[in-house]
Length: 442
Image (cartoon, rainbow, N blue to C red; front, side):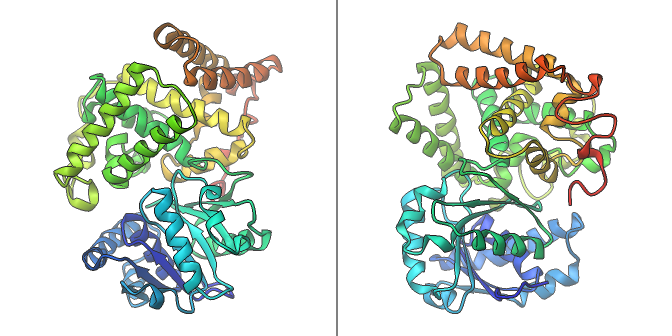
């Protein structure tokens, strides 16, 4: 049901995210105007939205009739002024390039009504890198959707008013989605910090020859199922890192990786030669696939072929045994990032687990996993990883500092006797942790 004050929403960028976001908004009853400079992209957008509609129906988010009705509320246009006219809210989803996003917001602020709220759907760029390009920062915020899930990150910039965040929170809820409001800016928000670690670790494992995309995905999917009481409920959530890269888009992952490397170099962060070679190799491998038109789900081919990719077939996990050499690096990277999000004051423990459970595993999140494993066990794994990094890259490795900070956070808990599930208290209280209670995901 629409909220008061928002009727028309302007979506800038008709790629993967723009198509998904505008469809969800139209399903909720709003008028959605989908803008792109490319007529070809706009022509492809309807077919993309039909595919997203099928996914949303399969997941129980909506019905076939509601999707069909939503299409009558979507207008596609390459006329920026027409898209912006009388809009109450704008959602930008162009490529992950700072200057492009800055130019888009400069352009649309002049076209939108004065009362309109402007938002960026950026995945990794912080709002303050964009917001100084607009005059009215009080009505500018980050509103980041996660396709095809219900999670939405909301972040205020240096000038964003509390009223803007309150309106956006109500808007998200009106779309049957869940908003997490961060305490402060953070590249990658909550979920994408965890998600980015999963994708990056998967790519590094592949690039270094540790496993094929299929083997790495199988290892991850088996790990996910081991934490689920209902394996069938995890079938749609247990996609491995390379299946996820296909859904995000190889071009998007490429741009994010290039951007992060450039930012590290700009800030004077010195990458070990071997790490630089691995990252360059990842970028080159993605570039080769992109040049062949293998962009992932939206192009019909990426690491898998669509529709009916291999990882969705019943035989994909048949006869496959657990491979900790692949699964442990994937999960441990996520656990480290989860700890740092809370230690650095970005959000609360429950926010992290809610973010992960809404998008990947409906039964447990990173902090629930740490409690289940034992906080001392997780600490030992972090210390082992720190010793490995020191031996290979030396004491100056930037990742080493992160691991030490995460380890220190766990050590402080252990000193208080908080060992996890077996002690009755860790990040949650047992035997009835909050994350397992009905309604947690709502």
